[in-house]
Amino acid sequence: MTQAPALTATANLASRVADLSGRHGWQDRPAFHQGHRAWTHGEVHDLGARAATVLAAQGVAPGDRVVLALPDGIAWVVAFLAVARLGAVAVLVNPELPAADHAFMAADTEAVLCLTGPGVEDRFANRPRLGADQFLALAPAAEPAPAHPVDADSPLYVQYTSGTTGRPKGVVHTHAHPAAYHDLIGRRLLGVTPDDVTLSVSKLYFAYGFGNAFVFPLFSGSSAVLVDRRPAPAAVDELVARHRVTLLYSVPSAYAALVADRGTGHRACFASVRAAVSAGEGLPDGLGERVTELLGAPVLEQIGSTEAGHAFCANSLGHHHPGTVGRPVPGFEVELRDRDGRPVPDGHEGELWVRGPTVTPGYLNRPEETARTLVGGWLNTRDRAVREPDGAYRHLGRTDDLEMVGGITVSPLEVEAVLRTHPAVREVAVAAVPDATGTGRLRAFVVPAATPAPTGLQDELLALAREHLAAFKVPRSVSLLPSLPRTPTGKLRRHLVRRGAW
Image (cartoon, rainbow, N blue to C red; front, side, top):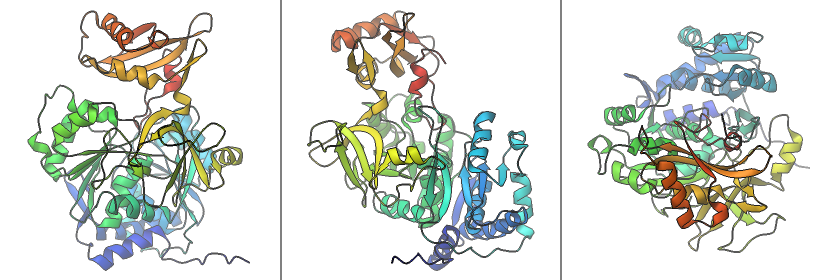
């Protein structure tokens, strides 16, 4: 008979990172920078232990779920550590979501308490709520709480999928997963050390940002710069220069904004950056080279998912293959399969299936969806890719990205890549939009690189498509727009693009 895992306080994430800090002498080193204030590792762990007592006084018990509807900042960090210390489960939500989404997530998780930042105080009227300012004000006077014993597989947090295809799903991760994120990616692939300073444009509620700006600093003794909103390009310049940032994490759309209208050549404000990482969406052809030229540092593309917790394929400082999402992360297995589940040979397109130590045990309250997505320990990522001879994977989009036009399957990424070569194009999305008869017609939606757009740009783009693409892949029309519909994590909402309006 299999013996149940022993419950220990040392398996508790909050206890584990606090012990690491003390053992390695990180207590007086900076852990998080916000504005002109820095918090040391020692301060963060002490405040988290005291804040756990505050939450317990609010009725939070082991196993309970607590919504964190907070912007990035020290309150978020302390709240997560406090929830973890109690053996409760943190529910990470974007504070800028519509009220209906907040209501859904609080109900879906049966949250016993909602910690809120400014502007969302009225979102959780039917549930116990505590504001971030009050929470932080109460913590210093409270007694430190002991770490509740858990096992490695105890739930630690729930993170919702980005909703690119509709209603988001709650993904469960355990107390063991963050240590693996750092060991497999932060330590082995990026070589994060106590001297590193991180700036993640992607936020803490997003799987990518959670690892970059919360997990890696606490497990390495390094520090992260926290910003409550996504910083504009000028703010990125200033933050990198002021804090001597060494690791920059962002998404392709934000990197595109960073290089727009700046000309070429390395800028002095980025002199401290030793590496940049891109994830969340495919890096368009040529953008990586332009960002590398601007930063004077390599841009390492990777791919992950909320279900995997962080990256499962990644380029690294030791093996960088531009144009790919890199090799499987150590500890992960990756297979390419056809639609019938059979492995495909190298050089052939297939769907990515992943197995590894941080794959979710399942979706919250969705056993049927869990059974469809997790099969025999393998995660169906619904990403399409091809394996290169060196073992790196070239990402070809999502299985639900494909469009049907006149009975023929078309990849919009191919059309987008052609249109993006025009110097007047900043962003582009292509989709089959139903016409008045309900027939799908391929249409392109373009964000110009400058406003106003050059006269005749639409005609030029259609001519460009005709020159380089088969006739059935040429869009019927081009619409110029100020922006594309994206999730707060920067991913394109293709289901909205397919409507032709948003």
